Length: 221
Image 1 (cartoon, rainbow, N blue to C red):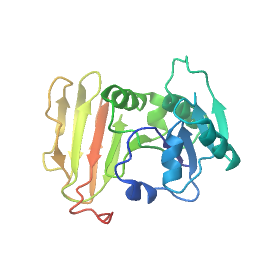
Image 2 (cartoon, rainbow, N blue to C red):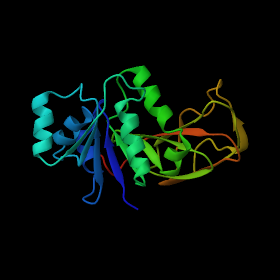
Image 3 (cartoon, rainbow, N blue to C red):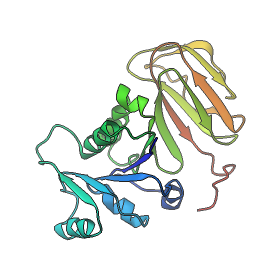
Image 4 (cartoon, rainbow, N blue to C red):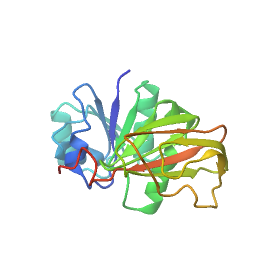
């Protein structure tokens, strides 16, 4: 399957770490002003989607001249630019889908971006938000984390309780237990080895994996 990289128009706190995530075979898609982030990393997206209110006419023309396809939508629309870009990637059967530059900034925008990942189609496409240090994605049945000892892992039940949760190689194990949206028990667990496992019987978990930069193999800037 072909992997897609989506550039959102959020913050980019770890540009060098993001650059190392991108492989030559990846399809690069930008949501409006996210094209600037792609260019800042030295890449031209193959497709730019949005209402183009975050790009100047000169920037838009430069992208077109560089070979990017521009898909323009009216400003008065129901979807955010990132939602449109994600819908395109899912319909094109790209997987996994990595959304970069989406975390941080406005709280409402961050929550909305996380909510996009809860769509069953996004889960099937293995969609995640990444900023080079933090990765966020949803677990519906099981997942394996690759990282380093000391990495933080938080498990947040989404919308309703999650039941029958089992974890492996986390400092505070869960053995068939439940997590509830109004409780904070799943926050700030810790990886004991380079691999950890999560599985659950019902519900939906938002998994937030934050690398420990003092122990990660990717400690260089």
